[in-house]
Length: 110
Image 1 (cartoon, rainbow, N blue to C red):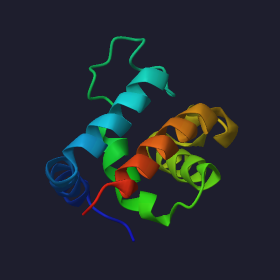
Image 2 (cartoon, one colour):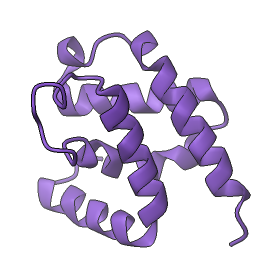
Image 3 (cartoon, rainbow, N blue to C red):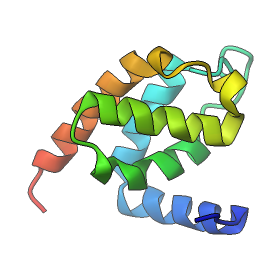
Image 4 (cartoon, rainbow, N blue to C red):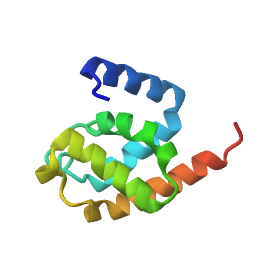
């Protein structure tokens, strides 16, 4: 399903409100690992928020670190194209960190 930039932006805002802590934690992992190298070039700390906004809704599909790695890589390819995103294997450490966050998030009572 192709979504407009406005739809993606609105969804991101809703996710930031509804899942503030999860959104911040995943965003922090991406900033820390800086898979595209934009933070090291001086980009703002919120540089990867658009990616977080499309990754979070897909985390419910994930049953493993491998699933998380695939999802994150697919979203980075969507946002930055394959050449810039690099191979999926480069996202292993990010996936491991996000998997821990996701498991913790899901163990909390509703």
